[in-house]
Image 1 (spheres, one colour):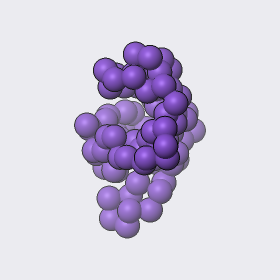
Image 2 (tube, one colour):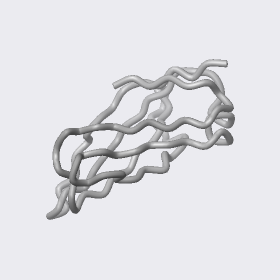
Image 3 (tube, helix red, strand yellow):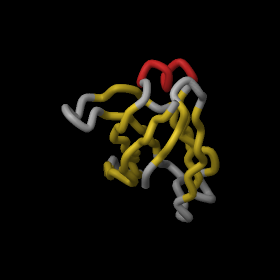
Image 4 (cartoon, helix red, strand yellow):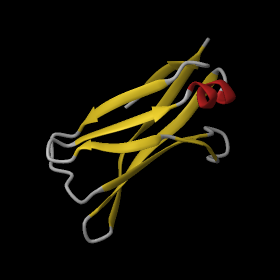
Length: 96
């Protein structure tokens, strides 16, 4: 799943997995497409576990620091029983 935002704007997206996420935790990061290094960490919230909704967000300061470019991103969750999975990944197009 690819994302797009304007550098310097805050970004938020409500992701709907259409499964029960009760007991899950989630985290999401922005990475360099060159080195794979983590460049930013999303604020990630299980917004409605019963409905399978997770919100990911970056502040305007974070998107400004990243600047214009193409990045990778991924969302990982930990299910009950400590089962870790990459649930989504894709590219970010940050524009001006």
